[in-house]
Length: 280
Image (cartoon, rainbow, N blue to C red):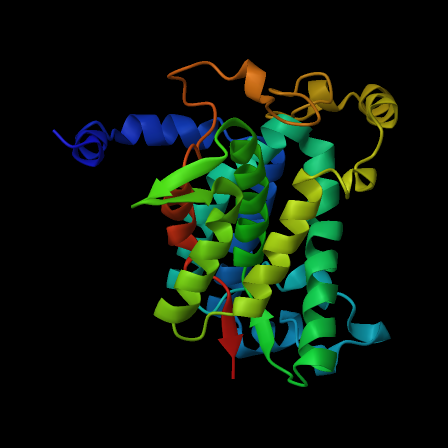
């Protein structure tokens, strides 16, 4: 029996329910905000929400800096938002398990929206001389896929594609190019900007953005966050430590690294295929 068929037959609603109930706090909050933004689009005018929160280079100014935080949270519709949630949740859960709740919230409500957004605006405005708006959390999906690709590359540098050996770290880039050809309206530049920030984070060039452990411990102890907040991941409770899984710690046959090969990256990212779209 094929592995995919066996996985489908072994699917259980109880396991899915248990998985959802085990999601850490920051993952719940971010996915919840995405869901609430979609619901708000039902009761309010969705076009008004998109106009308010999308990232459009010509609309960036001192009074509209909120767009750098809101554009990953709003979507074109239910299908767009659903694909976003399905692709983002397991990647975000893993990131929070490795880095903690405070770091995850501080990064995804700040630099992980701001940095790829600034990069997109600069290239779109001053290099391409265009003014295309983007929205959707696929920029986070490809950021996290790039982080996973670098970690996988350290343990498995290449994957085979016929007679060719392709570096594992290029898997998100291959997926981005494939989506740009197959999915009309997807933002190639937006996806590349998200992937670029993910690579820089995984290579430790942006680690300075993460608060020091001693500061996090002080905040957690002062506010008793671990005791007050359910599903909170503290600085001393992280699954793999601040800098992720080292190749020497991987156990053969375990499911610790979800992106073991380039095909794995494509499998996870495929659900994000239409998440970043151009707005005409």
